Image 1 (cartoon, one colour):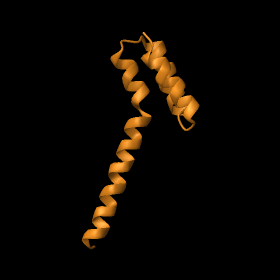
Image 2: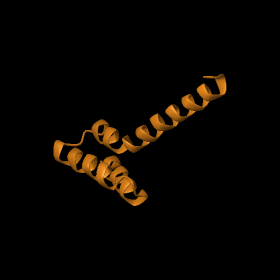
Image 3: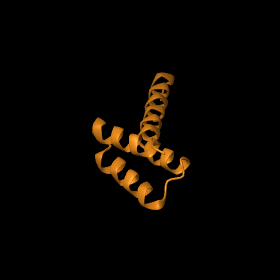
Image 4: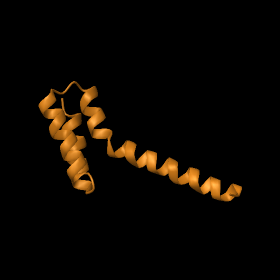
Length: 67
């Protein structure tokens, strides 16, 4: 394994970590804003099921950030 392959692997690992962090952001934000368990569950399930679409992810993020 040469250095250039190692750098590419590290780049892909960092990219995957960032995508997962952004994907889980609505659920984390719902926990930080003090939502009750029902709202947190709705946001988490909505993010997981509809997160692949931009609209579903934005809905979950909007719902999580409302006070």
